[in-house]
Amino acid sequence: MTENVRMSARRRRVLLGLGAMALPAWLGAKPPPLAKARVVVIGGGVAGAACARWLRWLSPQLRIVLIEPQAIVYSGFFCNTVIAGLHPLAHVARQPAALSDDRIEVVAAAVTGVETDRRRIYLSDGRALSADAIVLAPGIAMRSDSVAGFDGLAMRDNPPAWPGGRKALATVRDRLLALPPGGVVVVAPPAAPYRCPPGPYERVSLFAHVLLQRNPRAKILIADAKDSFSKQTLFLEAWARHYPGMIEWIGRQDGGQVEHYDHASQRVQLANGDVIAADWSHIIPQQKAGLVAESAGVTDRSGWISVDPTDFHVPGTQGVYAVGDATQAQPMPKSAFSAYNQARACSHAIVASLQGRPFEPELLANTCYSMVTPDAAFSVSSLYEVRRGQLRIRNPDSQLSPLIASVEARRREADEARALYAHLMRLCYGR
Ligand SMILES: Cc1cc2nc3c(=O)[nH]c(=O)nc-3n(C[C@H](O)[C@H](O)[C@H](O)COP(=O)(O)OP(=O)(O)OC[C@H]3O[C@@H](n4cnc5c(N)ncnc54)[C@H](O)[C@@H]3O)c2cc1C
Image 1 (cartoon, rainbow, N blue to C red):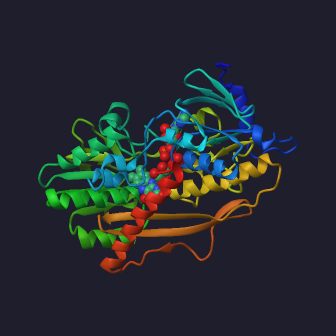
Image 2: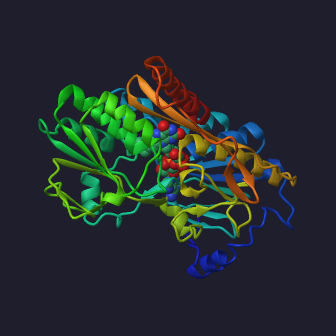
């Protein structure tokens, strides 16, 4: 039956007021029999697709609905290799509709509203759904106020492609190739937290790989909103080795943060007062949870969804969960690998909750590879556990690739990165 009811602002405030209670799902209520239960997953990116498939693997009888407006989703993971021309666009494209092979009902619509207390979901096609459990996996939205001048038309015209689809990735590649001989591109990574912490620096590396072949006198200036970045020593060593003199990094402490962008001239003004006459400025703005999370009233002041990492439920709700980049799950980085692990743990927790049995929190993992040339990569891997309700890196600490490594060792990691990508995508989408 069609309903067009939106959650009232008052109801949202009431829900937010319950934020500290962290009730486990189904406390004091009898769960429905598993065969009659319906779980609705919002978003068909890595987190949502993984969650839907894990639910199916754990329970053949559960009704699972996945809502995703885009017929084709493009993964951020490996999108830098598309910009660099190492892979065609099809390499990072997946169709959420393929999940119907697993008896997952895939709905091609956007969620326009969520009533968390009644577990009602409102769709762009006018329909409304009820759910016994809801999983929010809407990814990220860009903050259009993070760099003055970089909003609306400017952002559409000069896309961050984080990852963006066909048009955005092609635009970035075209701009890179159109750089005049000896030209300057400014790359402006955001302040943390944001999607894929090493992603901007991998993108810089692959920009440099393209420029080295076509435009070797070109320069890349990284105007950073941070004082340090993921795998920094490894990137700096790789840049000195593969792209000497081509890449310069200015951190926040040296006033590197971009304060103003002028779309017409592509000039940027840095916090230290310098105005850079760039030929192209590639800005990756600060980020927050996908917009539906905000309208559902589940984001906190940081703009992300706080979750209980034990089972990834949203504190103050019953049967509402969130996974993937939209969540505040530090120290786990916002990565596809993290999203997949969170989705797996969350699916176990949902099935346990629907069966009315306790759930033991699982160990979570993340591995992030960065390609610095088509044949060289390095990685960081960590295990995470829940201690006193908080996610912590488990001892021993993260494994980082060695700073000094042979050509073969870096090539092996590039092969591993490609294999991991293929494997993860197969787990999420079946191919
Ligand atoms: C350049 C780059 C490089 C990266 N490299 C790596 C890497 O090497 N390794 C790695 O592990 N990760 C990497 N990542 C990160 C990875 O891509 C993300 O962490 C991952 O995509 C997060 O998955 P998600 O499902 O949370 O979000 P997304 O993949 O963005 O999916 C969210 C989905 O929700 C949908 N949605 C949004 N709003 C609604 C709504 N209202 N209703 C219904 N659906 C909605 C969207 O259409 C979207 O399909 C990289 C990212 C980038 C940008």
